[in-house]
Amino acid sequence: MIRRTLFSAALTSILTACGKSEQAPEAEVETPQTSGGKIDARLAELGIEIPEAATPIAAYTPIRKVGNMVYIAGQGPRMSGTVGIEYTRDQAYDAARQAAISVLSQLRKACDGDLDRVVQCVQLQGIVRCTDDFTEQHLVINGASELLRDVFGDAGLAARAAIGTNALPVGFVCEVIASFEIA
Amino acid sequence: MERRSFFAAAGATALAASLLTGKAQAQSMGTVDAKLAELGVEVKGVSAPVAAYVGWRKVGNMVYIAGQVPRDANGPIIGKLGDNMTTEQGYAAARACGVSLLGELKAACDGDLDRVKQCVQIQGLVNSTDDYTEQHLVVNGTSELFRDIWGEPGLAARAAVGTNSLPLGIACEVLAVLR
Image (cartoon, rainbow over all chains, first blue to last red; front, side, top):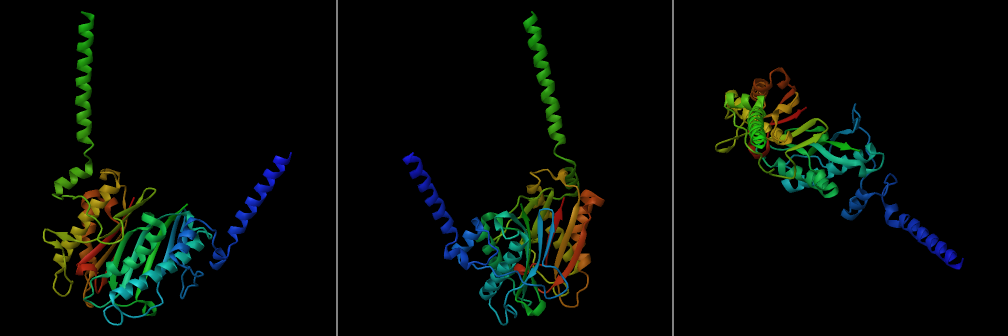
């Protein structure tokens, strides 16, 4: 009888402790949409804070879902300019990384807050605004690819295309278009 | 006496079975492989990606292939249409992209290109000067190869696009989605 009481008390305190750790301050720093899964833990580990999904700047929808495929509209960084003029390749790498974080914000919304549903990144198209003689778009777009790999592992790597162009909306340094398979 | 004839019959059956299997294996080399041989197209094994990506992704029965670098015996085919490269040379580069696409596709199909039902989407990016307008003829290098191999199912919903610059200065980059 006493043993049973002790046991249930211990169980209750353990469960309460678990409940408390889920409400720990670290979790509250993340935006309200997180579901506390494995990918969210990875993001916290990498120090990546995903912003709220942005609203479109023109006539389009940021996300389309078809069955288990999520198609995300091209995302830009917070940098405008041209690689080879205002920006170096390494600065553009950071721009591509920013664009990939915007991709994640749309993806999380498409997954109803649960990024653990992501099975793989399927296709990634990275377009870099650059001078005619800039030929390292593939290294710039690594900024996006490597972020997705850091977050999702090898499943974050995609069938990719890296492309240069002379002009992009709002003068974006790059634009990243991605599609994912989710569960 | 019975045992001897039994073994003889078993031996004959085994021999016949191995002959039939051999014939079946020869046939499983495939219609597409035969077509490629006929066209003189050699599909090479896939090379390691030059950056953080994979050559292809599969989702159900759809295969998404990464943008391919055109290569010949000297390495990547570099140039700019409208500047130092003719449309015919661009066509050859796009055809080289097509052969690389086939290499990735073969890997995605576990070696059996007969599994391909149709080419769904092709995107061809052509390194061009501002006034070059024959990108569609360049990308025919890929499309016509696929049509020669698969007939009408090899044609795709296609986009041919010009751009000012591509990785490594290559003449074109072609991506494809197939079922």
